[in-house]
Image 1 (cartoon, rainbow, N blue to C red):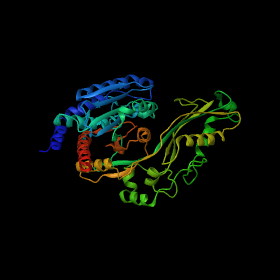
Image 2: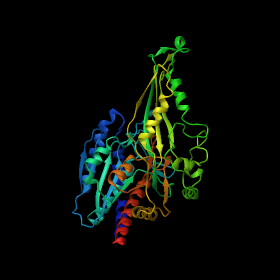
Image 3: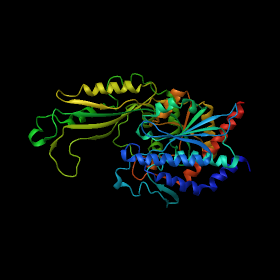
Image 4: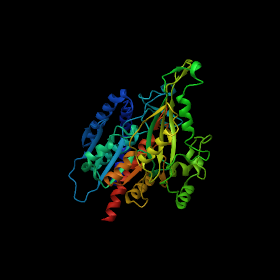
Length: 467
């Protein structure tokens, strides 16, 4: 039996223990966007620190201006020609609201057999505690069998990904030397299908923005003043409706200035691997707004978008209240493609809004920073090695795909440290990420862990072939 077979056997034999520990991690309410989640964040960071120390890493919980980063490093003395591999994951999770739509306690996960699948429910079950746990368990199994890790290893586990990673740039600059590596593996992505793996080679940029329209008055009686006074909900709704035209294009000046059209070769490749049914995965596109001239996959992966994520103001309670609100708020996200500058897009959007605010009213904005879009060349040797490893485990070709999602760290590592990032994960769109009843399953945890073992072997083979 070869060494890699022994490592894979170790993964399989320790699966029950791996699942049990993962459920412990999921049970910790590490919600990064809520003040009440701070205790859970600290508890999860300490839990991960203990696990990594037990495996044999030198581990530190690094405090930031927000939530901590768990930073771990292998302790073996490196050879002069050794590889240095960085693994990234995030342990923070989204809020659970609306709680009454959950059929399972989001922080009391247990394995349930449903239609032959051993599934567990919980916030973070899929995004992204199972993802980081899979590579940690692969490294544990490798060291258990071989007595050492396959290369120099650095692990970075973030606690603010779900809030846009506001303190990550400062952390990366502070720990620049410790984070230098040959390649970074980012485990926070999805599969192509339940049986076919994927590597994400294109990530969109991301800008978050909050807009509040204030009337000249506080809340008023709508019967007395509704016909004559400013209604911020009406004003804001009108502004939001004007963002897109009937062809699905964004209307404010400068949004498309730096956008290159999707190359025909890229469109042909995407058409060859997908159709609408593949990417929908049971999600209906009815009532959606696809930019004219582009297929759904092209709009999702290759075109910039603006989405309204939330809107509120006035009466939000269960009973009737005849109020003319004093303010109204909306939250938006901008998903950007290559060469779009996040700050320029933010500035153009704010100018668009200001030009539509009537006299006497005022607008307030919240939002800063953002991440640019990222592409990884499909000729990258680490990407090729990872694709071979995934294919060996899943016995299916690895799809190289784009995504409408964003991982701020990828751009920050690529631009700030000059590191190539290979983005891999085992999430499915049916996992209800960010939604009630988020879930994952035991088989994907097992095969995801085995996939990382095979990827490590292929990376070593790639290095040996070059030398």
